[in-house]
Length: 261
Image (tube, rainbow, N blue to C red; front, side, top):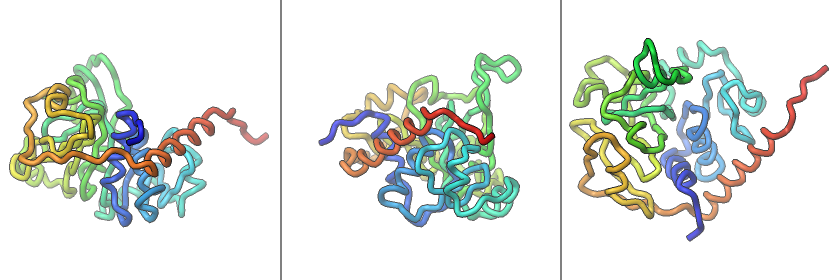
């Protein structure tokens, strides 16, 4: 077994959830790493869309932001921002919305707006961007978030993006068109919604993780599925592809930016 870090296992586990024919709306950060790892390994035909309007982009390095020129230069085409939302996302053409957040609750609702009261927050976060619409319209969403009791909380400080709202059929009754969270990938394993309650429950553990570790990282009494899978450690090919991607990215981002005269 190759040596690997928890965040590498997390990214690889997330990448494995993506299929070759998926159309994926990608968030910046770890979601972007997972989606591009899938493209470089088992899903070469995956279609990656970023909020800046880049369609079927194939970046050689991970973008700094949705406005990174790497995305436009390697895209099949670039369309206006309203078209991404109107003609692709809201039209039901996005299979997977891949998101990060600062907080998640037991029903997969996300906060990326503020920590603390909205009017006088302890921390003001980057905000929704397109996450609210992605969570509402994608056929399913995947979420990546390191598990601590500050991030997996009983109650969000602000609900930026809807998961299963209050659980049960409350999402369906709200009129949200998308399917909601399919999986939440953490640094101990994978949570997924229960079929009736829609509450997140432990479905899979990483090779060295335990149920006790999972429960310790979550701020509510975590349900455990009847059968909890034990995920395979990273394969040599997955680990090499991920490390090469990060190495290329570090090298590219270390170069001085030179604008034309």
